[in-house]
Length: 349
Length: 103
Image (cartoon, rainbow over all chains, first blue to last red; front, top):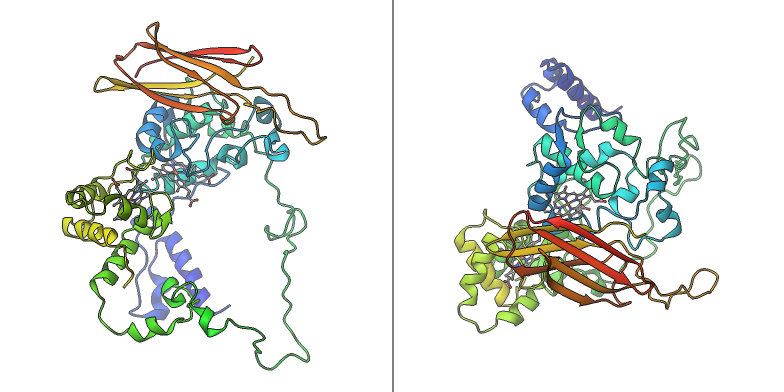
């Protein structure tokens, strides 16, 4: 075991015991996580319901919260709009009896929905609690998560309309999950003995012990002219972890040292503000492509102010029924500059 | 008999928005099953929606509409508690009627 992983283990133990002593080896480095920090981080809910917060929520409460916070992306009935896969559908009363979803096997449902796939209700609770709504994760109260879950289960006819889901009856509902018996462990994704094939991995990489090659020999590589076909790879990798993209493309290399131009700054701002998750420069993703936005508003003087306002306030109906969420964190100046930049073709440099 | 529709109706500023999720195979009649036989056409042909007994929407559906169709529409008027009723008929003579109170 490396020194590094030992200290990680110590950190985990220190967290559990809430003690200080584990840091003695690394004087002056870091500090133990506080109990409040651990509590904020340790929110997972497990299949045996360890970690499940106490609470309760009715189908009616869930219907209300779902309509307000989730329906814009997932549809009022979890049927979803054209962008996201549906949450509900494709399950039958028979599946609730058998615990295996028939439509997964015969392909009779047009799309695979969440409730067709998920085997454990704890996973759904955990996911919604930690990750949704997409634009405001961790903003739901436990009772709201219970209510939303009750509503989704009711849409799939797993629980009746007057049902209230709580930490006390959730284990009973697990016994009615349509795909509860659909999870397989007989494959190498599951390490350890006692699970299916004994945890034999599906990839084998045996360390060479004899007659090994002494040095790495590259047998093929992208020619230089093709290396930057996808832009500068170095700029596209996260700055954490070991993998670094190779710097590709002579131009961006040469310019790296220069101060950023205004367009480059705005291009970065669009990235860090999350715009590019939903907009392509040259095509639709969730929202319209910036080229389409430019084509639509070119030469319209009032458009800029209106669009800047819409970017901050969010809205729907111009390009379809999918709404853009609000971006209150953008300053007015940045919102206006971003719109100007979009209407001038969203240049990268 | 077909499964119930899911209906939500909500009024705001004098306009009621109705959302309906139907449960129907919507077979086009053009698809073949695994043994090569045509799957017979089976689709909704007509849909009506009423508000307190007055028709607010009439639609003709055809085989181009997807399985389990979703429909949303708005009409002027409607108050909390009013009844919205949606009915469909299909080409095999089956039909279904469901209702919801405006929220």
